[in-house]
Image (spheres, rainbow over the protein chains, first blue to last red):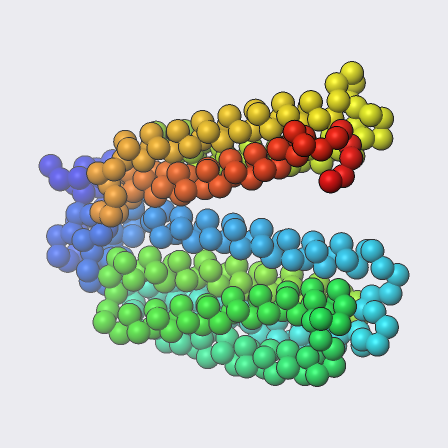
Length: 224
Length: 122
């Protein structure tokens, strides 16, 4: 009896591998086999644990940044300091809404990949990536406009404001690069490894989108 | 195996977090009155540091044990069986890496009591 047969009996979920006879998830090298392996898995993949740990450390990082902003804000009577205009409300809120909306295509892409439908997954990821790239382009433009008005070296507000936004934009850029890499890999079809990668990139993006809300609310808080 | 894996991964960060929070509380509460009970802030800090350091060392040993017990699963997945050997091995590897870092942070946070006077900033 193979490990896979034993597992199927224990979990009561399998009806026999659809293709290839893969008995371990790492042996699944086709869409149907990867989908089947994912359904039979008894534990989260190691890649998922990796991204969970990454998200935990990143959450601590952004939590520290936001705490630093609030600490500095509570130490002074005027925030932002004299000579610096309060932040605009409209553009950051709309942009964040657009970025958060990409959660839906990513979620649907994961669902499609899990049932072995690689083409819909690919298209959904491409759509999400295009929106995210547009978001980043506009944000970089706004970042440049802000730099024309005040500098990170001017005061504590400028320092923490630009650090916070820059850190988030870098995370968005990394996420876009991850989706780009994923799209290139998925052209060759779905395997267990690539299915796990879709889930890992999705978790990263859920986190980045959640952080976008926290960062934006912190950023625009003087104008609320 | 699961217990070793989780203690190996989370034991040292937990020890540091407790040391950090207790140390902050001790300073805030104790330095106003010159001590907590009949014991000085420095003594309490030294005790907490020692306990946290021992906890971090035990976490490192737990992570090494979990890693050694699941070495065969390294690089082959190991998430198809219960307990998941691949997960245990991966998280144990992370534990092995981070426990010494947290031990260093714990020691550096507490070592001030050896050179600084009670409740005085350096």
